[in-house]
Length: 385
Image (cartoon, one colour):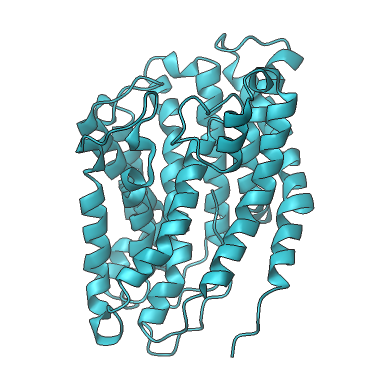
């Protein structure tokens, strides 16, 4: 559920906004998104989502996935937005896929192996189909393969599908370069608008599989980040658009209002009850607003964000992928070890324990698996002229 981009081209003096290769506040925001996903799963497993008023809000912290997808859309589309304006070259396919695989797969495979071997409930159902589907991130296509400790990986499957599709999207917009680059923002908006209606289509699926968990249904969330990547090279410093989209108070208020609306019946019932197709449309639209609203001030305005850039926030951001992939496995261990029954309350206690044990596990995952694999992938990079 993460993407980093540290090799963007340096913009020239005429570029309206200068997206830096590394924006510290985005790292802090990614950490908050990971903790949001953790929070909503703890709330569900402790039945806190049934609490009046507060419960629906806790259940909708899963909208942090929209923030994850928006971050990926921005960071991975940014080199293509820059290349379209003559500010550098988009990454080669080999470089792109090698680094995406090194970033995602090794740590993920470790989690899958640990869960399917050591977690009792998961190991009891871990046949060949479950193993293959989870290792290849095909859980959203193969029935009954989402298992305890790994159910959150549906969104990682969607994320990896976006990684595979992104070069095709870039190829489709290849002609929108130079003078034609002004059409790139409308093209991204059109992509979001068209795919917003995906859940209204009668897509045939196998039993227990739902097309709303496939990439087309969540492309508007990625498109929110892609739109920001394009706007970063369009919005002029000091312009009205920068004062609006770059104003934290306005944009974060927009995101908050969209989040609160998502906690109502407009975005579907909380929990595992399936929503109506129109409610999925509303939920996806609100998620796009949440992602855009939270990220816009960070990428369209050069003002420092000390809280999101603080050392603690940056550390949690570095560990965010580990937090995401490990927290459910940790949660399933906490219940028997501390004698707590699932769905029996103790939300605050379970949340504290889950955070306390997930953070060091995530830190170890980053230090022992994620970062060494990324460094290994860099050995194959060729110096760019």
